[in-house]
Length: 497
Image 1 (cartoon, helix red, strand yellow):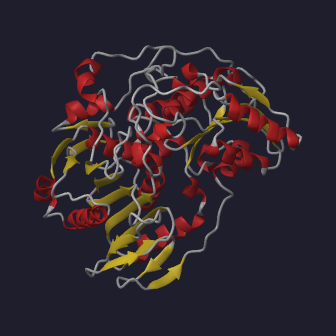
Image 2 (cartoon, helix red, strand yellow):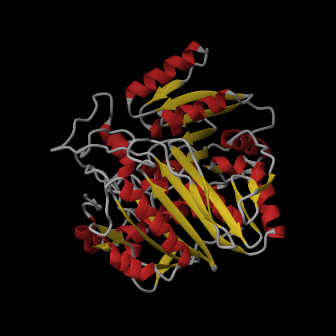
Image 3 (cartoon, rainbow, N blue to C red):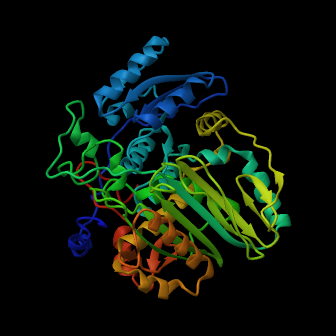
């Protein structure tokens, strides 16, 4: 078993304190076009793999919306998407460099569906160019970036929507209203992201960049390095310089629902995490087994991700275990390879998957699923009304929910390897957290991983000052080095927006 860490972390911590971002902006044209209720809105989609295709299809279904531009640094995806649109008599223009997209004054809005580390810079540049933005989750690669995105949206008076699908589901609002009125105190929020993730392989030396890719543009803000994994695309999620682990990949959806349901407009007060990368040896650096504990103003929130199947023989994932107020452990089974769910456990029952259950696990009520047409439809509708409050997931909402993910990752990244018995001694008195650890231990045992013989990364307990969006107290000096990334010229977010 091998647990990979950010390869440059230990060597860069000291030098990182002396690195400052250059104050540099790009002079794009600033469109002041006012969009009327019946005007056709011209949109561009930047980033064209699977999620990008979803954005394209969403815009195609919205009346009076023109897809006028597509952009991708990989010409194979760009050519395929352009040709498919042409078959539908949609004549979009293709671009390799998003800066050229932003120079086109006919474009009103852009969807940013790039890798995570491009989201913030692409959004800031778009706002400077006078474009409205719908940006995929996680909205940022670091906490500092997210705040700069909010500042850019406000300074340039742009609509910036965080692409959190659940915000368009009105059943959540109905469930949350009921929860706060009828279910008493929230005792625990339990979140699982169990999604089958197989090994990304292990290379001996640098991999080959596809001939169709402009690697300089693909790399953008992050330091340019050789490709140290088999596949360029998607597997960047599992290396720290470019990705944010499963916590930052699918976690933003559930942690956004958590914050929304708890009606919190601040970050959790503290965070603690543990886990590792188990079951295979590969070039991935992030954990495939990860537990994060948050204290949200006295309400415990436990997030857990697993990348290994329910058993070694299946790609199906485990169900979620709910710990009800009367002490019962209730498992809701799941059959499929992606169990991403959340339960609000209260004194008088719990909310799980838009349904109400009593403390014995008996379903009492379903909350009606009623949608708003998805985040792109909501985004376009808000552009037509011109009211920021009509965005179901404004960029500040997206920034806060994404920052919760960053907090958990930072706790893990500055953690250290220890025997599992040291973790047990640390958490045994925390009833909920210890129960989750025992379930995790049993899950790994099915895959031949015995934590009694292995080591586990025990993250640092960190305290967050939500006002400054920086850590305070013990371990804060090291943790705050991860608040802000370092960037590569000329792909730099300015300190002053």
